[in-house]
Length: 261
Image (cartoon, rainbow, N blue to C red; front, side, top):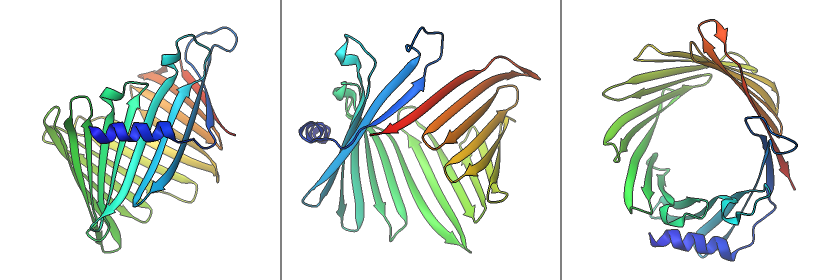
């Protein structure tokens, strides 16, 4: 797709803003600092007539002789307005594999309360999926209906979301499976969200707000795993513990820190 090449070219011609450094701890046993997984990311943008242009990239910063392995992804986005519709096209490649970049196109009409989202592949020049969202205001509540079509495996489903103050209900349904999540804000600091599907699987999420920039979220899937995420400003820690009946079989721990220059 020609606009993918244009987005990548724009990224190459422009200077990026201040980068952000993210340092994670990799799984496994390592000597010295080999267990650290530092990544740097940055983005910038400008305007060209009626077009808003943004671009960015992220890369590994571990010492290596394979320079081509350093870039993780490169992306570019163009946005504009056409006859009351906000239209944007975003292309993103993994590393330097520009020929197989993923392309996302969005069209949004606020007056009609409609959004259309399309995902395509630059390599095959084919559309992978399409979805459209229609919003409705019903007796003080917000309802959205999103039919989704995956053209790769010819599957489709619909997502209905209901939001009313402290209660949110999300239903996802296809011909083969259904799932419902009910999220309830109990007070200013606590939220619970049980999820059940047509196979009988159950999960429970609990979020505890510790401060304005700190929270703890625990998600329990019986006979599967318990995942705990702790966010504290620029720090994020995740602990995942596999569960077999009443037994916890070890734990995977990851820690990430974002550093702004």
